[in-house]
Length: 249
Image 1: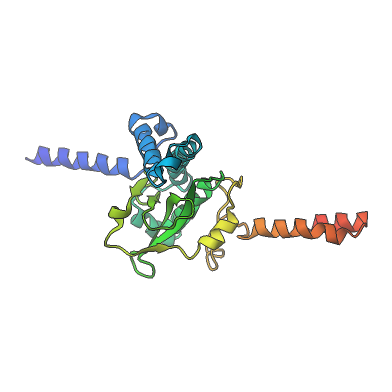
Image 2: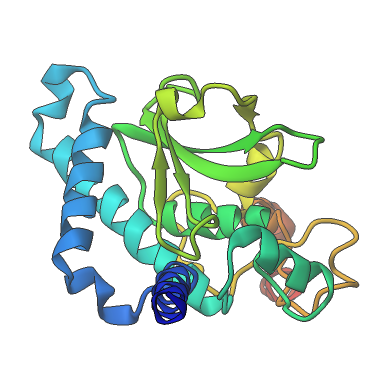
């Protein structure tokens, strides 16, 4: 009996550790991951009207979003060195043992990666669950273009250490899910088609002093656009003045 208990404990420990470490870089080649990406792409297509879901362009977008969600969820976990269940990892971050890995940070990292390509048929958004409580949790969602959180597919890259969790509407019943109030700010920081790498993070007020992270301004892209639009007026036909304005940007 004692031997049986030891073997059972070892098996449980192995299962626990396999679920609590980020996937390896080559995990995408495994059959179950290929099936997950294919299934998720089909799930995204069910969000569209049948006539749109049949379009090759829509199917290609759904495949790209699904592949990106699965692959980048694992990459984000590896980048942040997440090795424990989400809530336990939070303790390490809040204790300054680790720099990053809170659910809202992982949420925004995944949103960043899924906004690198403009999409026509889908919308990538942010959602928050049980806001203001001890169960507060942040995720990304995907819906048809113009749609919101209702009837969308929620993607959780945080819960299982980079092993993507997919939640449909029926899976979210019993909890209070709502649109994330931070999305307007995050969407400006990560506009569709951006080329920011994984080292581009967002820091909310109060965290900048607490975390040794690479900080880039949230409205960097909009400020650059404003500067570019203002530069012709600043030139005034003066070459030197125009050069100075450009250097200031």
